[in-house]
Image (cartoon, rainbow, N blue to C red; front, side, top):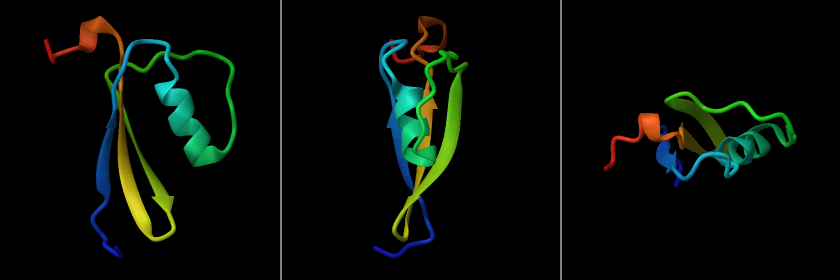
Length: 68
């Protein structure tokens, strides 16, 4: 699957469950113990082999929840 178009992935879930930590771990192979809440959404591009993913890290805060 060699394509220039990235696959879009959305991380959603409750606050403080590790969505951002998981994304940072995939991208940088490091772990950050300090907690910084995501405000709104954070979009990062991650590559595995020749496949690109645009990962949307959505805030778990109810203030930003528009699904209900």
